[in-house]
Image 1 (cartoon, rainbow, N blue to C red):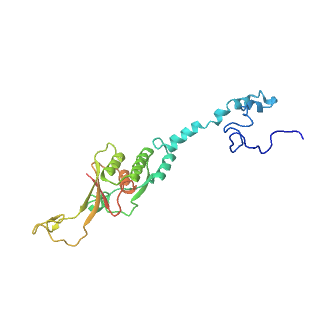
Image 2: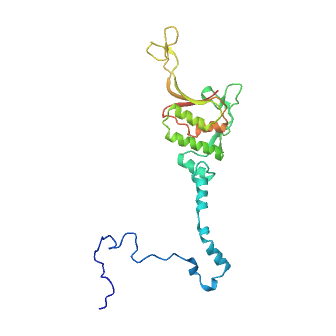
Image 3: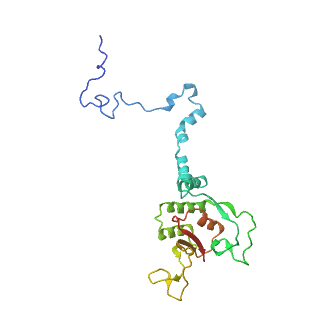
Length: 249
């Protein structure tokens, strides 16, 4: 019988590997010649202008570099994202572009401020809807996204929250958060907080004493949209069980 080649399977020789005795990285059947697209064109279309033009520019037609760059700039890069791209980032960090904005002030007590005016300055509530939907512009929404991203990883300290306030309202004036409690002043002994001596304060009446409070203070006027960002967007962190209030001075 005529010898047609080495036995199969090939016996181990030299340094064996999973493919036999061939060196890793070298094809046992040699290299394929480079692909020539012109060899696929039949002779009758060899000079067809439309076909030759398509073949000559095929790599530029298939190149997706420009699309990848546009996707990165308009969607994935939060610094340059626009429209839908910012909406995607808003869902990632957990903040909406549309806010519930309070429309106008009404007569109310001090506890309802801001949004309430005292007697003689504010009208009685007419029963009309108090809020309306407002969609933020791209630039305003971008600042809100950055602030929410910072809030997601903040340690909740006063300096960290103050930094978020500065990023939300740059070059507007002083904005800061303070902690404290509305203890009141009652008759008590020296060891107690917020206590004074006999004949200087009344006895504790049993009313609730608020000890877990925080206040956002702004030394400039807030627009209704900015007030909605502070109160309704959820960007500014607040510990559970702590009462937060807004003061505009």
